[in-house]
Image 1 (cartoon, rainbow, N blue to C red):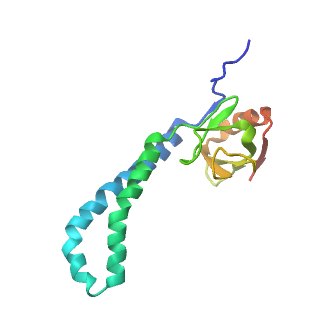
Image 2 (cartoon, rainbow, N blue to C red):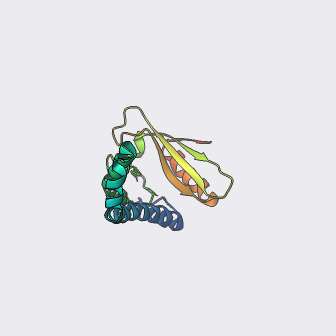
Image 3 (cartoon, helix red, strand yellow):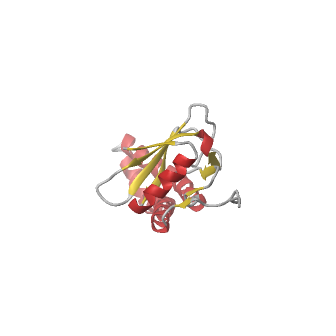
Length: 165
């Protein structure tokens, strides 16, 4: 029996995925809401301070005006973030800029980074000729210890070097 092309070999833990997604959404919403309110409340103080501290006031104003754009960026990144899955021929691209998927043939190696607590960070290194994304070193996410063996086996079966870091 042949396996379908969209079969999921490994899936990121839902708790870690929601945590990552909510962090990006929260940061984006805070950066979109707080600065305009702060600019509205501090406008007259900033004009008064501008005669005393020109450079610092300009920096504060630039931050308060430009940070909603960064907030919009993080909110869109959080909305469009996909759960990490390993398919037989591709993985979703975790970086915002680049193609939607990274073909497994473009991955040079996968490394598991151990930490003091249970979640493990998994990083991939792309080959030099890969045009899937501009970054050649990508952090896939955090995974549980009991999922590591399955995931490394899926990478090894597809010809990707694995290691521990």
